[in-house]
Image (cartoon, rainbow, N blue to C red; front, side, top):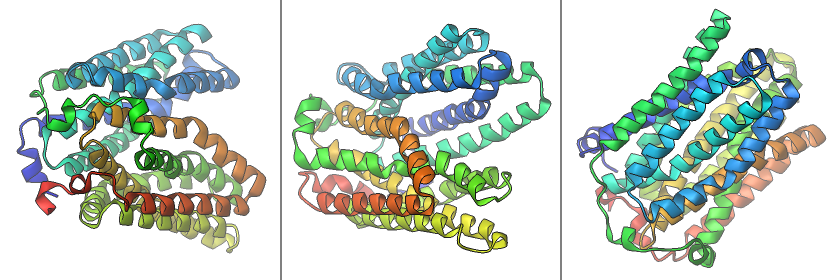
Length: 405
């Protein structure tokens, strides 16, 4: 994998990485205060808020498939630009919404446009640099950095305590999408490689056993996202540790991802996806078992055990993200990038819709045993992924960027 200065010197790459930073900073500003806005400003009950977010999330689940179809026919720059401008319009409508119907409409449009954008930005990355794993990893790293910066700004908006500050945060997020759209529209046209000329359909890709299995297993491994967003705060409350620990652990996760993601991706690029999947699974399984252990130690030591669990979870998350980049590069060799990335992002969307429910059910019904079940599920998915990835995908050279071949 090439280093950062070399990668950024490639035309358009620095601009695309800036898009990731700007986009995720705006999202980090909006997401933490969205529930506060819906309750205090829009006047929705907590039940209505849950219904809005659930319906919008479910509608958006298949949006990456729609994006993949568009990306097979249109320039990815215009697909992403359109999605960004739609997000800006939806957030502007959000800021003025004062009824259930208006909020639901804005939230649904926002979810669909956001999830349609993700395959597009990945297609742009793959078309701008030969170091495909490198650019995908830097996108993720700068996205996490931006999300952390946005969350800090959101905390400041909440400390102000005024409705105008909350509405202003939404409008700043809308403006970030406009800036992102302008940057994407001025990118150089991505290089159309031989694989981009193929018009692979979803049916053709799913009919191939190994790619289909890897895509499905990838969605299972993505449960680490629900563990972090839902399992962690719920478990902190269950262990009796002060709730203030949750934001600190989220911050720790963000800092570690920013510090480690590119290094982990470099290692996966050199070792191969099969090894990356196995080690990611071991780390994620160990993290779940450590969460279970936190209820079996003295109360004074519980916070330390939770910190250890988050460190293991973050290392596993970074390994899985690096494996995702490897998988994206591997499967786009000889296939239409829009089709591959549309399906890949759809597996992540399905996890985002169903994963939180699965994690909550397991932890509520089983407590520490629920963590053991999650550990077994993640480890099994990782070991199966290793076995499938070690087979012939017909893309042996795609797994390695040019710099490490």
